[in-house]
Every structure is written in C-alpha cells, then in structure tokens.
Length: 93
Image (cartoon, rainbow, N blue to C red; front, side, top):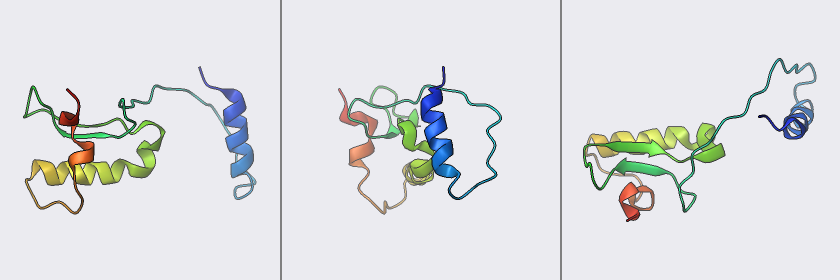
C-alpha cells in the first residue's frame, strides 16, 4: 500500500519545477536490499554461472545503469573501471 503522505510530500517538492504536475495514480512495491545495503552484482558462490544485479533498493533508478555496466564487464570478463569486490554476492557466506 502506498504511503500517501510520502507521495504528497514528493509531489509538493516536484511542483516547484513542474507546476502543472498531476498525479494519476500511485503504487507501492518491494525494493530488494542486501544485508549490508550494497547492491549484489556478479556471480553467485553456489552457481558461478548465475549472475545477479539486484539490491539497489530505492536507488535503482539512479545507480542501476552503473550496476548494469559493472555486470556487463563481469560477464564479458573485461578490465574493471572500479573494484567490483564490494558488490560481489560472494562477500556473504
């Protein structure tokens, strides 16, 4: 169920730049998070050919593209721009 107080606050903030903004509908959904609040990007321990790119929580829209890039680099076995170890699913037992 959507938190309509939160929706109203977001709409009010957006109206500063979008005065004609009209909300037609609002919904709520689950947003997956990892235990340490960092995304899970890369191969799994038990199934090394199973790759994950999840756990972005509410930041999915803002950092999802970076996660996708990191996953593509991992899948293609290319040189990483950043250290992938903080995001590897294998960091958990």
